[in-house]
Length: 296
Image 1 (cartoon, rainbow, N blue to C red):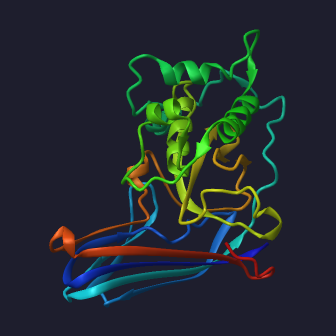
Image 2: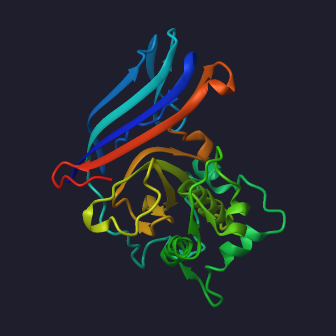
């Protein structure tokens, strides 16, 4: 079971001392049978007046910091060591109820999955729907894994990854029309396409571990990373990373899951002062294998 240490530092700089509003920090990895947090530390300077932890509506760990001190810089450093145990390559056996699409969700699970099945973004001309339908075989039912894999690798192959400096995630139609975007844009686009097929999908925020032999070709891990989870009967939530063509959670460290990207922002806060007071922000992230000593 590989051990990974994640060091994530964000520093905000201002032209003169400013006051800080509430900051919500979503950087602690999400525990599970395949990912166990062995240690975690959050260092903030200037020290917050109060720091409390909550579980949000999805069960993600969120730290909420409030301040009573002015400063020219605000530094937030999260360090976590995790035991990462990636699942074996995802395979659906032929007798699985979801082996072929379309399939049905269990009546008991469906009410809890509705929010992840219902599309959230407008598609007035049916462009997203048409794109999703391209992955279905014209004759007979389509193997579900083929749809998910082809969609994941199709986005990776056809779309162009590009960093954007605008806040937020772009509309899935913008991603489709421009054939470009960030990892968060790709994830939201794939989620909305799957929802139009009636497949439950949700957004995942976390980290991409780029170790030596896979460094060439991986993109989207310069800060945090984002990908997709799909829910299948009997298989549960399965990871798909359309940015890098990864199926399963190999090299992916989950931090948060959400219905929409706006619910899984790694760090969000405010300051009191003029816009001109803000000088800049620097983010540095290092994901190190304790055994290999590789970094990203």
